[in-house]
Figure 1: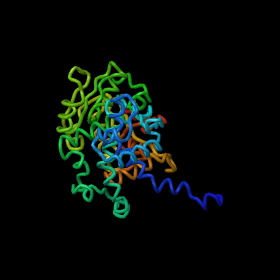
Figure 2 (figure 1 turned 135 degrees about the horizontal axis):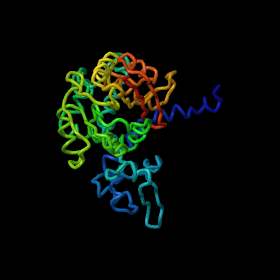
Figure 3 (figure 1 turned 90 degrees about the vertical axis):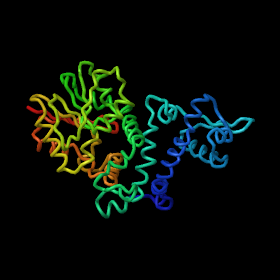
Figure 4 (figure 1 turned 180 degrees about the vertical axis):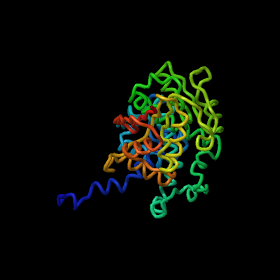
Length: 347
């Protein structure tokens, strides 16, 4: 039972009540370029100087910086000349645009898209459908339309997805030994960060990114270096167009976008195209079997409600979908990070 102190001062409830305030502080500091400026200058700066450099009010910037100190995203130095701010190590690594592990783009996607959809979470729960129409004026039958309204928006979304794989990609690809698969298709591979991790980890493999024509065009132009000959492209809609034969298919963060019927439809097409002895690798955030957690995955599932037609699932639920399509010898590996791996084989 809760103690009297917990009931008199419900700290957990107060923290949850302020959760969106925490997110928006980080979003705003990233968007204004606070962390990039401090990295570029390489020295601690006063709030007035930072405000002048970034074109903001001194009052607003001082309060933003202080909140970032409280979140341990900035450190503060009190000297005779005044108060000075500098990045913490975690901000240098993950919140600056130039870092190889930067999460800036996915943070901006959350700020500009996810945040707006979550404003209508109550409506999503009542109606059981995504809220893109309310948030962006885009048909709820085309939840990805808002991501692809322009090449710039598409590029931001793809960069955001790439940033996730910069910290999680190697873990999911190394969960199983994939070295025996040399002919691989990455369905919905987007900006290609996972494909690049794959050819780095498995040098003998050749991987083809299969995605919509406009996505492939941007990936070729912006994300995949032309000298990387082990990565090829295939333009198409894998629901409506044919899927070429391959030894392994990677579906990373694909099935969670769709309901069970669509998932079975896609996996059946993959099974038909797959060479005997080949397989499919699902990369998803797995719920506990009793749906008790992890919290991040539960929140992702709520996000699927407001943004897509899908949901997050347990390993048993993904295994059932794979079995319905014909796959067997299903193995599950939890990475301990955001995304896990499920491997199914075709005999």
